[in-house]
Amino acid sequence: MERFKNYGLWLAIGSFIPLLLQTFGVDLDLGKYEQLWNAFLSILVMAGILNNPSIGNGFRDKP
Image 1 (tube, rainbow, N blue to C red):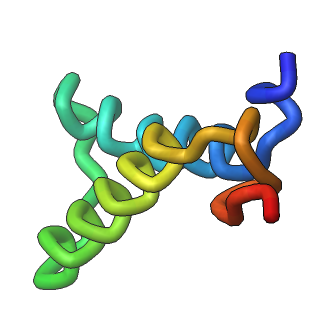
Image 2: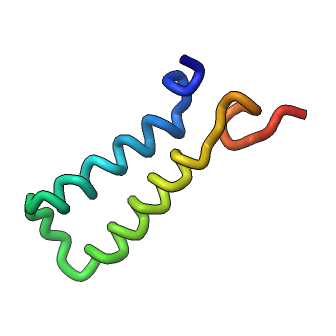
């Protein structure tokens, strides 16, 4: 249950939703910034997936 209290998880889920919508054909027209936006969202999703709150606080390890 510790994972559900972590902001990194919710940031990853929130970032994954627009990527999922684009995959299923919902048009989010961002013009020339679309590739940059997709890269940014992908980085946030990866950071949230790699985050492990059981060994620290957010992205920091326990001392």
